[in-house]
Image 1 (cartoon, rainbow, N blue to C red):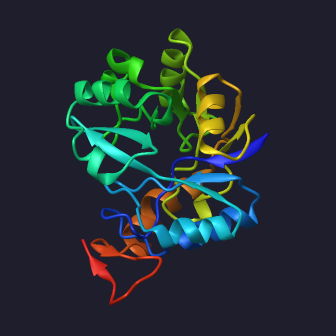
Image 2 (cartoon, helix red, strand yellow):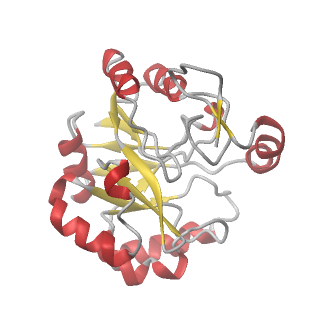
Image 3 (cartoon, rainbow, N blue to C red):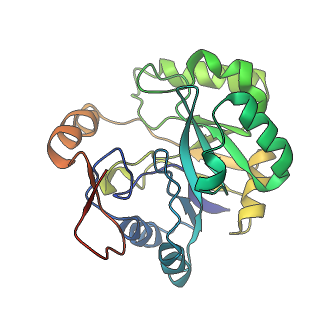
Length: 240
């Protein structure tokens, strides 16, 4: 079994204004014993080959991925380029693209039943054929988990595996939520194991103070909206 996290963000994200680059996530992943991660920026595929080479030198598989928005709904796409992602405007576009790509493309449903942001919500079940797995969202309490419960009912009804990930928007968020996968540390092996349900999601409930830090302190104090932090900057920090 290998440890993976397939949903997280870094300073290269054009929307979040995070202060740490992808290389910091890679270092943290290696420190915590991960075999593979995917950095899923909003609407931008991380394509700097220097970042992928950095991960390879550290012995970590970095999967090219993106949190893409289709018809105002978020989906996670793995092993995709920015060029291809930009062609996907509707669920039917994604359906046709998936048919053409076959098994070397993986699609999962992130935090699908959460009421905020661009979660799939009522569009999850009508498009369930698109998704190889449904995410168990990291933001949940021991005493309140209704949104994940809704997603799990849909996953069970349609025999979809459940995957856990951090959706980290800060380094401290990364490490407690992950999935153990019965696979070799290669992209085809991981994709196949997820589809076959050979996975063990790990997503413990968060505390109240953790949620306040996640939704109040970090967004309003830690982040710098509009700033992009590159792993290998050539000039001053960019603005989105």
